[in-house]
Image (tube, rainbow over all chains, first blue to last red; front, side):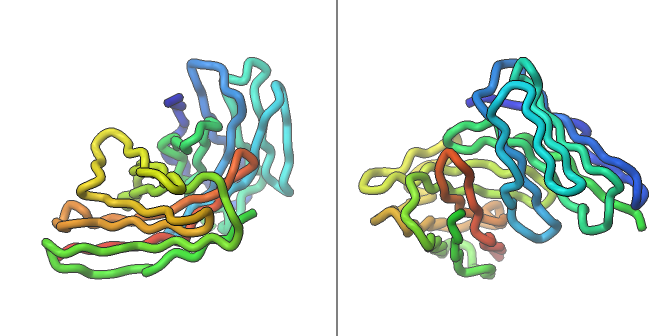
Length: 108
Length: 112
C-alpha cells in the first residue's frame, strides 16, 4: 500500500507556540485523513482532505492538502496542553495504513 | 460516525492461552479492521475483517495465530491464540467507510 513519511517524529513546544507536522508521499494521493491519539487513548478521526490545494480549519487547527496531492500538513496555532498527543496522517487507503506519527508535547 | 464498543479493555493472560477480543459497532459498516500498537509506536494492520468470508491478513500475520470472525456488518472478533509475551500489546479495531473511520477504545493485553 501507499506509504507516507511524517515529520517531525517528535516536537516539544512551549504552550502558546505554534506547531506543524508534515506528511509527504512519493505518489499522488486520492485523499488523506488526519487522526489524533491522546496518550493512553485510541486514534480519533480529525479531518479528511480530498481536493488539490484544499484547506480546512477546525478552531486552532489548519489542515492543508498540497496542489499536487502528494503532501499535507497540520498546523496548530497557539498550542495548549490539551493538544498533547500523536498526530497521524493516513493516505486514504483501504485498509488504513498509518504514518509513524508526530508526537507533540506541550510544556506549560 | 460509527460508535464502537470494544472489550475487554485490558487483560493479563498466561502464556499458551487464547484471548478473544470483541468489537460491536452501533451501525452497519462496510469495512472493519484489526490493528496492533506497541507503546509509543504507530498502528500495524493485522487484517481486514470481511463479512461472510475469511479475513484478509497482512504480511507477518496468519489465521492460525489471529483467527478473526465477522458474522455480520456490526460485529467482529479477533482471537490471539497460543499467546507468548511477545503478543503483549494494544489491539484495536476500526470500522467505517470512505468518509471516515472510528476506532474502538483498545484492548491492552499483557501475557505473563
